[in-house]
Image 1 (cartoon, helix red, strand yellow):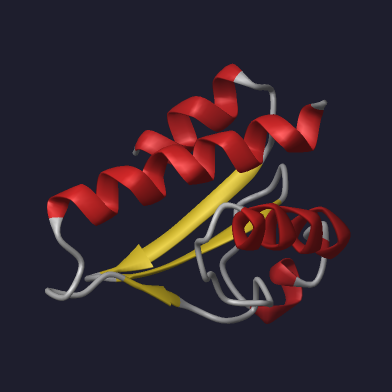
Image 2 (image 1 turned 180 degrees about the vertical axis):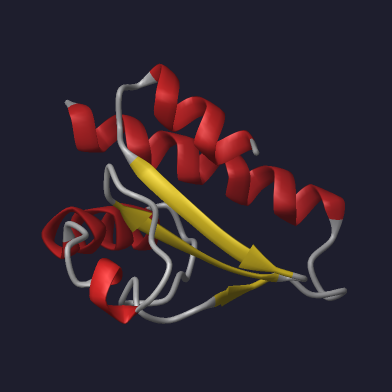
Amino acid sequence: HFLWFHAQQLNLHIQINHIGSMFTIFFSTQPVTDYDTAKFSDTKQYAKFFNFLLDEGVYFPPSQFETAFVSSAHSDAILEEASYALLRAMKKLIS
């Protein structure tokens, strides 16, 4: 995973859950397997991440308890652009 790899390089603790084209990102050191474990994730850090993404022009779910989707409407170019915007947002979190 592009995001997980870069988060590790930046010393950000994230958990990415996915099935098919749906995924969620949790800022947590522990695996997120259900609502109880999700409640322990850092929602304030996710809120900052969300707002940094908005600044980058990427519309992500406003809550980490919601799901992001990739669809056939997303071209390779759009996905690459979004990936680098996600990376820039993660870098802003540590600065």
